[in-house]
Amino acid sequence: MIQMERKPWEIIGLNLIPVIGYWFFNWSMFSIVYIFWTEAVIIAFYYVLEKFLARGREPVLAQPTLFVRIVKSVQLLAIRWGIMLFYWIFILVFIALGQGKLNQEDSLSNLKILVFQDDSFNIAVLVFALNGLLHLIQNFILTDRYKSALMSDYKSVFDSRTIIIHVVIVLGTFLHQYLMSYVHINSRLPGLGFVLILSSMKTIADLFFRKK
Image 1: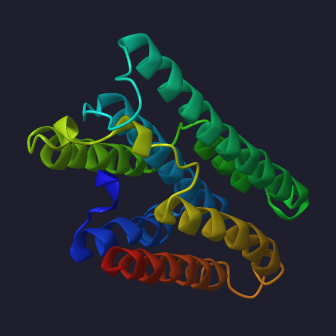
Image 2: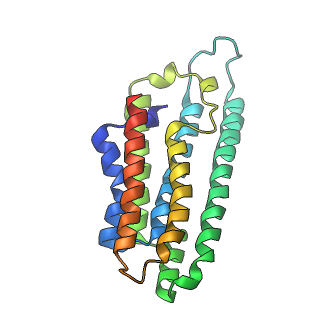
């Protein structure tokens, strides 16, 4: 998958976005979990788009028609985004369970993030989306790799980067609930520890799978 082919500095830079968002734009811990979820949704979209654009000659299967390409691509996207919808509900429920510990301002901030009404969060989403588009154009289309890529190879429900993000989402959701009980000690430090732990874990995992 072309989306995996990121340079080390690029991986580090993208995974620093949640840290920057928390420290400079006052993102909540929920926002940090949610940006990882959004990244996984974007990855799934470009994975399926590569599948649709792949034009390699299938060695055994009949060459898919445009209709077959559309149907198979939509099916895979529905499966991948269906899994992400489950995680979306998972995040929402666990955050909702902790709403009693949040003041009205924090709850409103989380709601704005949830419906993409926060400018700083939307810029971060745009960065992830443009990064994926740039890789698709540079490494898949302009290099003519789409001409040899096989559509049948794009059938994975999970890839390594998506698995990493799934793990981070689950750990982040539970860690969010745990750290909320310490927010009265210092309102900034629990969140900083939270985002540094998750971003570091994801960076190390991304670099590891890139090397392999």
